[in-house]
Length: 357
Ligand code: GAL
Image (tube, rainbow, N blue to C red):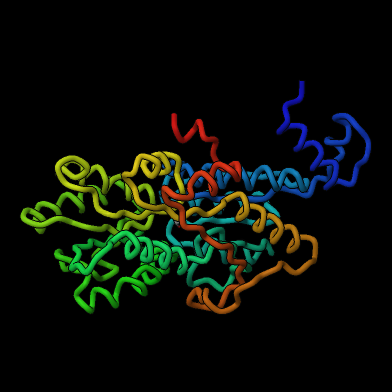
């Protein structure tokens, strides 16, 4: 018997391919529009697995053959995967870069073969051969995180805060940090927020490859060095995978037991972190509906490949060092204990059972 999801997929294929008949013959009759290369950074984070799946599903519905490759956060491996896609004659490349500054060469080869490139979620820098960019409002992600910290710190202060940023080779990391600091900086300057470690510059607080173990180590070092006789009241963390590492270091130092856990932010609404939010351990995450991002990206690619003009809504913010890349920005959403059911469960992103499991 056909499940509800499979049935919905069939209906979509029929709608897309304009077929009104019934049965499997119609699915086979969907046009073959060629293969599309989809380069994703890593399977270590669940969001990228979902991104790859969503992109593949939606390209398939339009008659493309998706080729999804993950590079295990290895920059050279990603470049080789892209080279193979160009050599195979993929019709377009959709890329979530590991190192946004390392793809100039391979993008040049794609351009020589007239293969359009779309940057997915992360901007590709220093290349004129990038056509479009689809992402979320990355500065706003940071603003939401900074605001969650201020909302969580009630009273006059001063409050002790420590800052973490993402991977310095990911253009998004700077946007997140700058967005958060646009909210936090005035309060650091006024003395209501105190960074006892003194580590406030992006380069100092960045976390290579968004590695939770690296963030855990840094938090442990800061707690040992600067918080023997003081309490950390808030931690700016740009991503759930880092937040979980930071929470482990905090737990090992007695937070969540004898000491109250600090306000701590995150991003991506990863299931393990949503569970921590439900349990009152992580304060917030920034939810980005990756299903929507995949949809926008597939529409962009399809319209490029069929002679149309992709829809964009930002032609100012994303200068990649060579030119401003026309961008479609989606809106991120703040999620905390008060609204995670409404935002994540009611929308079907997770089931209630998954969160309480
Ligand atoms: C960023 C992305 C975030 C998060 C992070 C770590 O580029 O925008 O949503 O996933 O990478 O994977």
